[in-house]
Image (cartoon, rainbow, N blue to C red; front, side, top):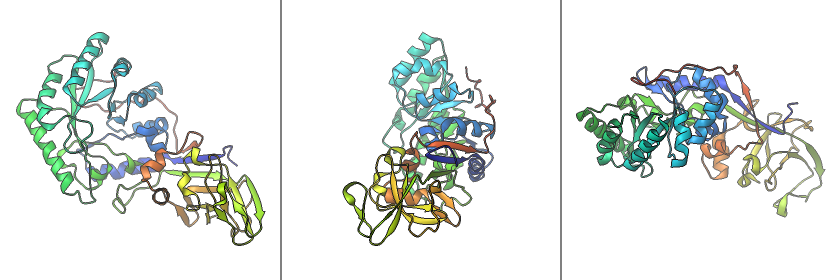
Length: 389
């Protein structure tokens, strides 16, 4: 028995195969920047990033500076792009780490120039243009002006131009096409004044698998890398990377009419055997799953009974012959012919698969399958750039 109350098994070879699915969808002229933000969607950023580095990806995408610095501290020398906002106090450490930044306004360029002068550390930046998301990014009509501010400063290099699609259907969809048309216009306007950033990127998993990558040379896959299609049926060939398991720590036989858990929200309609599992909402097994979800014990589906508590869940194993303390229980993943999918758990929780995976807590030990020893790895660079400083 594994020495853990609850654990997640992360299949790194499956991750690599999903990367190949993404590459096949894009073609040979489009580079890949895997997104490993939110602890690689709950899979563990450092081991996942190391494995992707060995697959020869172009760079790594993270959500904020703390995630970027964690990868640097682990010895990863690959180009790293912070996709989100960076506040002023974080800039010196980010520049010292040789981390690329996304900028969203002229004000950010001016603040960044001050930090570059103070630290004597040059920096590569990607300009994000808001073509319809309404969140981060400059208005399209400001893009040329801001790009000029970047290229006119010797300590800044404009390494990329980017946008983010708010809505993508399996076949693309009119909103996505409208955003891409705005993005193409910005790229053309930049080229007209002699500004041609090495990287052009707009697409996360949805856009990649909808075959919308004709106008870019870099993509940002996230959820698809971890084996979850952005739309049902939109990605044949993807493999689930994470399975979540726990074990039975206690069994108790109850008479008909027994109430289980806080507030007694479930009452047995027969004599039953109830297993207690050492996992709860603190670990990411959502409160909403009480009296809703099922788990797998010895390859059979068993209902969660009663409320999910902070540290424990109860399940009815009456119909599982031989169920015993120390039996492995599957919360997410396959056991025999049965499977609990992240989509199923998300639906019962009233959320999306991304939220479920990112919510798996730090008490859940990650076990990596197919992991190789971590060693520094060289990475391909954008045209005209240098290695991390």
